[in-house]
Image (cartoon, rainbow, N blue to C red; front, side):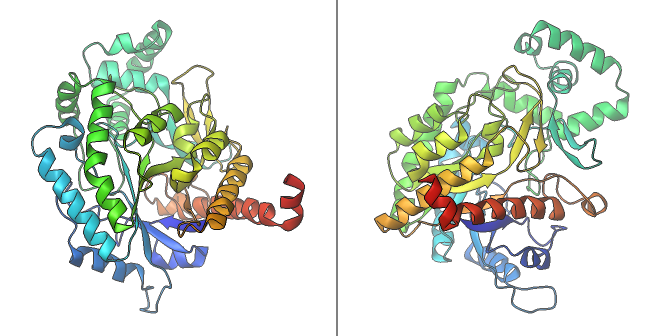
Length: 406
């Protein structure tokens, strides 16, 4: 498993020096400042590669930009409206430019409107650490009373609607503004940000787009870009929905193993694959993460290893970002399945036998609480997660442990 680290660019409060000291092997980044739907130029790509390659004192970092996360798929492409064909052409040109620069893995997502959704970006845990959290009652209060989406109340059980009304009534104006800002925060570091009016406008356009239609749009997109990726020797990996259940009346098409199978079978090329995010998929108790890695492993091109703790037993309930070894996913079993897939690939002579992974998200601990980096992306919290994952990898790779398992 190739140990990588997500970096949001020169404005990221976690520096290249920090990454180097963490001992990572490669960098995951994106040109967040480039507007969605436009081409990533060779010059912009080269500049990001240059910055990644240098420490603060000008010494070589020994690191390289190895994975793109994310090359954004525009709302026009997802809805097949407006400039969607021009945006696909720009996406393909960006992909070609990345390939020429030696970058061969691109993570993307096909989530409508918001890239991920949380109600609290700094939820305080009993330990004093903070983390991101999705609270069903808060989200219902946002949807019904702040966004005031038509029909929103019908999307929730009656008891949740009642609790949300009480929760909203008890919020002051500052808390209401904060909640709305948290929900529409979307992708950290992105060039775009949404207002409530923007969200309402997008929701109105998605009203006529069913789950089947959105899946069809994804398949159409892949039918255009995956053959070129195959030709260029690139690997595309679709990130799952986060969270992996319907929100705001929007369709979801990448939330389960069955979802992934349908899309991969529709565009059956090795270049078209999966970002297996154990945190996003783990927010559904019915997702078997070790099993998914075993069954879909040949098409897993990128790994996000994190854990969440589901706080309620019902589907679509509250959850928060747990420690990497503390949530509902058996991380030891997941890593074991990844290492087994790498051994199979290596034996088969695959050049991509080593799968890039990154410790995804992390709790803010120690000096993270003062630094206030991108929500979910603290330095020390992620380093702790990476250290824990390294421990699993090292133990499972030991001949005694591997022999006993076999």
